[in-house]
Amino acid sequence: MRIEPVIPRPRKKRSLPSRRFAVIGAVGLILLGILFFRLWSLQIVTGDKYLAEANQNRTREVRVPAPRGRILDRDGNVLVDNRTSMALQLDPIEIPTEPAERRELFTRVGEVLGNDADWVRRKYLDSIENDPPGSPITLDRDVDDDIVYYLQEHQAEFPEVQVNRIFVRKYPQGLLAAHILGSIGEVTAEDLEENPDKDLAAGDTLGKTGIEQTYDDELRGSPGDTRLQVDSTGRIVSQLPSTMPDPGDSIRLSINEDVQVAGETSLQSIGLPGAFVAMDVNNGQVLGLGSNPTFDPSIFTRPLTQKQVDDLYDEDLGAPLFDRAIGGQYPVGSIFKPITALAGLDGGYISPSDVVNDAGTITIADQEFDNAGKQAHGPVDLRRSLEVSSDVYYYLLGADMNGTRQLQDWAGNFGLGKATGIDIPGESEGLVPTPKWLNEAHKEEPDYYDPWVIGQNIQFAIGQGYFQASPLQMAVAYSALGNGGSVLKPQLYLQTEDAAGRVLKEAEPEVVSSFEMDPAYRQDIMDGLHDAAQAPEGTSYKVFGGFPVKVAGKTGTAERQPKADQAWYAALAPADNPEIAVIVTVEEGGFGADTAAPVALQILQAYFDKQAKAVSGGTGSVE
Image (cartoon, rainbow, N blue to C red; front, side, top):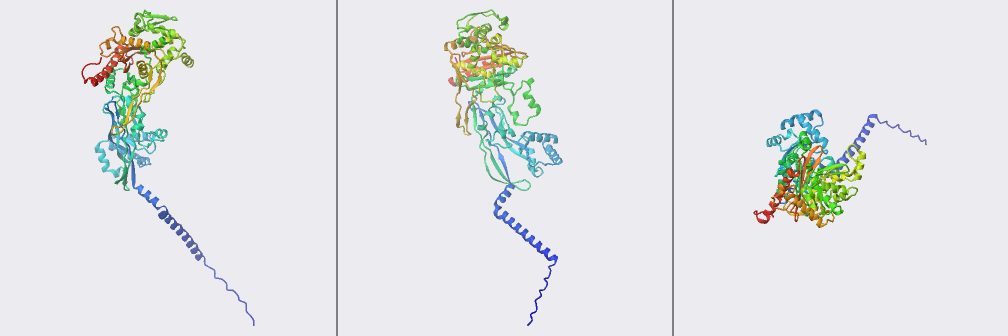
């Protein structure tokens, strides 16, 4: 049987369109799988996350600054408080990036505020240059109610504009203690960088000067936040649960309002630049401190024009922002003489009973040195030298101590030549000249500094030459004389209080250094200063002769070329057991008894009148 071979049939070839459909179908299945996986991931895996983000897109969080704590004087009188203000601000996120659109926005906003587009543009550029990124751009504060209502009614037309209620500092006592209180301002990028541990954000305020700066952490408080639900146009739909801000604590200062008012009023009445300091000699509390000319602290609660800024620093206007009480560096004249006397007594160069014949002028090393007006005082001992302010007596002492550090060391004992550490910024260190310092300065600037010769020590002995000190430094020095040798850190801070007035923290007196002072020598000097103030031939008898409290006081008239003589007065009272030291200086004020002493009288009158009323119920006088 024959078997026929099986011949396979040729396979039918698939057409090209069928292959394409297969590939497309496969790709479609793959894409469908990817899409399904993505939808599953979005809805199941990360659905909660994106739901939260979607909700946040409909929620606006507004940072709510805390009201700053108040600043009070020692009796609880309010020096700085808060008020609310409506601030018109631009949201930097909403500002158009296209120049034409931005210009159109500036024009519309400017019309609402009564200004042109260039005015708004300058505000915008200034904020971009100086404020941290993302800061709201404040165009105006204390916006009128009609503007606020208009913007609220036309919110959809101005999505870039916000009107926020903010806290602004107010000053119930006007200009009083302006240099002490200081100012606040919006944080800068530099502030954020320098204070990473503080809870600060763009648009917050920070203490910039004075007490506001030193105690910013206590005064600032903690911000809250307001959560608002908004629609797609930015219109507020509802308010969500929010966090309330925690107000700052209050700071009570050692300032005695009566003393502060008396010092500022009396100094301002003279019409010349100057300063005063009143200090408790036993604990370092500053009872009054002021500088003239002063300024209105409320000026910093609103945007400043360039002219206003320039005026604050203009020396032709007296540089109102400059605090002469702590930053002024001056020769102090004859109020330095008690320190020279102690240096001479301690070194054995004089004794209290040694007599010098004061003929009104003396020649030392071929140079003539004169009393004021070449007035001759005749035979003078230590006590009389202070009473009549004999320069000749101290010229001789300065000459005798030349070549030693006796005078420089005693100036250092009293804290001169270095900062006092007062709790507001801006104080100067002053200068106690030494031969080494001056000779090195002469090598560097021979046209400005003369080399050290005996005349330098002679001038230093009467508070002249290159010696410089601030009124505050002299107040610390006289306080040390008054308390017997303790150099105290001057303090304005008294205590911290919460909103209910409960004391959270109190200041403690701080002794920076102390030195031995022979009680007998000190008494001789105090007697001489008392005679200078209240004995008939004393230099300030015409001012203090009839004052009911025993005063130890010293006039000073310092040469300060090319300006006219600068007036000084230093006082300790009561002379028998000092409580208060007062230093007053008046630039170009001439003789100390003419301009500075009357200011000191007003300060002491305010201090002792207040004390008398507290003791006797408002009747009688203090003896």
